[in-house]
Length: 330
Image 1 (tube, rainbow, N blue to C red):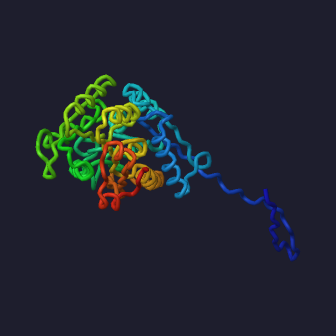
Image 2: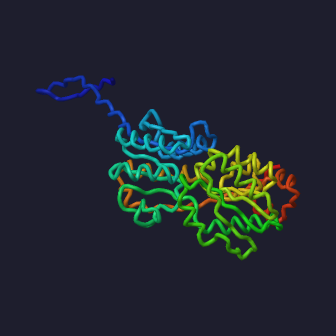
Image 3: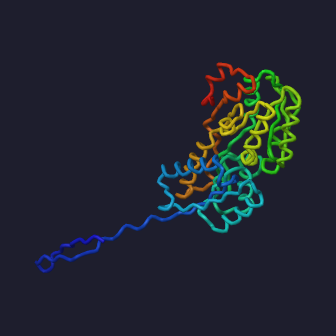
């Protein structure tokens, strides 16, 4: 501790009294939980957490200094995800981050008091997790991921790079992404203005995955769309192996699919969304209510073309698509 001399005039004499300077109070440690649907060994999941840490650090929140974080990784196991949500709620942190729609579903059922910031969630209003995007209400707010309008964009991109394609199957797991049944109802077996039809391809097991892709490739003109779904991330290697085996033009919402062998990817920048979510964590930890923070839509999108895969499929990528791309894998 520092010593200071307090000088006072006492009866005409100057007296020096030592004082102990008051030490600054230590910064209060805040506690948050993070519930991830994917496994801890998933590269995409780790990249998202790194982006979240970066966003928090920029706002002055540093793990081990003024922030303690409890991470939970479900590895695609829905029973485990529910158990981990219950465990995090029991720990009573100041806030919980919910990555993906299944994570939010478990926390929505587990707590109405702990603030929840969701990240990469699809249709939170339609599923009843918040009252509206502008006024969420309750203890939940956050950042959405995919909108129905993206489906038409995906069909146009597939048709633009593979003109002979006339139909697409939309791959998802109904257990982890039940909202796609509603999303695709108006698209099933209907012709898209660009000459494309789309149909749901619900897959719950690895055996179903192989059978679905094999059946799609059996007839000419088929293509595959890999939607935003934790199950698709977990089965990424199997999906990419099968579409390569059957030479099936494939587009994913996730950039990593195109980097690892899919023909195209187009979708919101998931790392950027995680980075942005730090702003709401910061505001809630400083006293703002989730109910008053509007849910936010993606602002940055990425378009990636895998030229190596295009050549393997015998496709020539038009110059206009190359010009529009954010990255080209060669």
